[in-house]
Structure formats: structure tokens, C-alpha cells
Length: 333
Image (cartoon, rainbow, N blue to C red; front, top):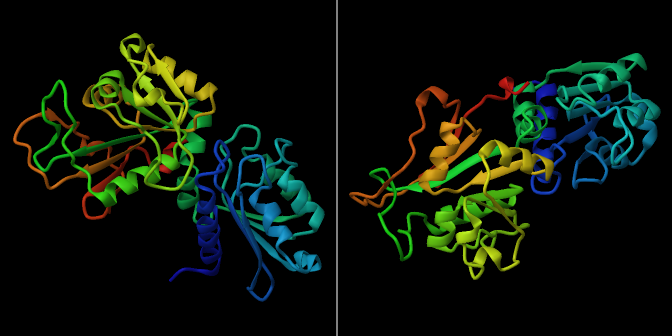
């Protein structure tokens, strides 16, 4: 049975997820304020990058500020202790006289990383850390990867036939349709949650994709083409100015540096086969979204194979899409 602390922290996590498409490169964070009777008197989440943090929104939602002095603040991530786009949340908590703070996990960002907890404790605030810690760490995996590994959080995505092929062998014409209307919508939703989406120059030239979020509501990601840009016709839809497009002709390590410098926190790699294999062989991936179609091809371009040694967890959506996680949250430190 879920305990009271876990119940409120679970609410923080649900609130945090409401900022999934709008807070990067900041982390998703949710906060709940509970009075002595166990009633929620205020809650909030980080809504948009550059705007108020979750703790600020939760405090502002409390109708009677005097009740803050007998309350407990639950927050999924350690309150910040430095001036960035907004003032330190640790200072706000202290100034409002909130006596108790329950934190999901410590902030991996070097400018915070325990400093917020220390500042609160030094001011006499009762602090507890580690409630639903694993779940709270998973919530900020892209943020943690970006800051600690100095590269984007990388999601590999492909659809494969029931017999393990990405497509038929071809030099022209459209690819075999392996996705359903539902799974296509799921992929476009995922695109809205990523800062950039990448394909190889062969896929760009052969498939002429748009790589936008037209089947879901949300911003279009940066489109990245890996390979020789001089061979790509400027008439391709990737150059239609619907979304920005970056052509990269260097190594994957150079690409990671370039995307990190552009504040690209999450990158989705949509193939084709050569590009997917390159990322897998370089051990540059954190998550893989694999759609298993019921279509049989008989022959064609083989789909990548993920070693079971690396699978941490598996999910299933619409009966055919599987999500694999390369790293557990506890390993990003």
C-alpha cells in the first residue's frame, strides 16, 4: 500500500510530466504543498523554460500564505540554490517559512547538486530526500544525460516487419508501410518531446521525408541529416523551411558536441539501417522505440538487434510498439 509521502510525490511526478514538451533544457519538476491535516493546499509544475519553477507556482497557488508556515512542500527534484533564469527556489522556501521539505531526488546539475538541500538545512528547514527516488530520477534522465554526459539523451526509433526487416531492398519508390495510424500518431507525439530528429543522407534522398509533428500537436524538432550534404537536392522537403534543418558531415562525437552546444537535450534517431547500426555500435543510445509490424516481407534490409544484456525495462503500446531502456536512472551519475 502506498504511504502518504509516496502518494504526494507520485502527484508531483504526474504534475511534472505536464511540462514534458515545454521545459527543455530544464528538467521536468512538480511540487505539492500539504497542510498539517494532510490536505493539498497548493500545487504546481515547471510550465515553460525561462518561467517560474514548480515550487514558485505551488506557493503562488496557496490561497492563504500564512498556512505555509505549518505545511510540507513535496518536490520531485532538489530546489535550486543559484540564480539562473529565475531566483533560487531554496531562498523562496526559506523566506516563506515552510518548515518541512520532502525531495524526490538530488539535482545532478553541478550548480545545484546538493547545495539546495544544504541551504535549506542550514536555515533550519527539515529536509528529507529519496521518496520515490528512482521514479524521480527517471523523470529527469534527458536532463541528467545532457549535463553529465555532455550529449543529448538519444532515442533510437524504427519499425520492423514480423520477420525482422526494415524495408525491401530498393533504389527508388516509397518505403513499405509498417506503421499503423495509431503508431504513427505515437511517433509524432514522441517527436514533440524531442529537440531534434536525425536521419541519414540516404534516407533523406530516397524517402524525401518531412520529419514534422503534423499528426500531433506540438513544435517541430530540429531536423538533422547525417552524411554528405552536397549530394542532397535542395528541393527535398527537409529544406522547405517548415522546421530548421542541420546537415552534419563529421563524426558522431563531433555531432554530439555540436548538438550539446545547441542545447539539444533529446535526440531521436529514425534511421535508416546504416545510421541506426552506427549509433548502436558506438554505444550512443539510451532508449529504443521499436514497432513490431504484423507485415511479413520475406527479405530486405535487416532490422538492428538489441542485445538482451542491455535491456533494463520493456513497455508495450498499441500491442506492437516496444520501448527498451539502455540505462537505469541510477546509472546516470
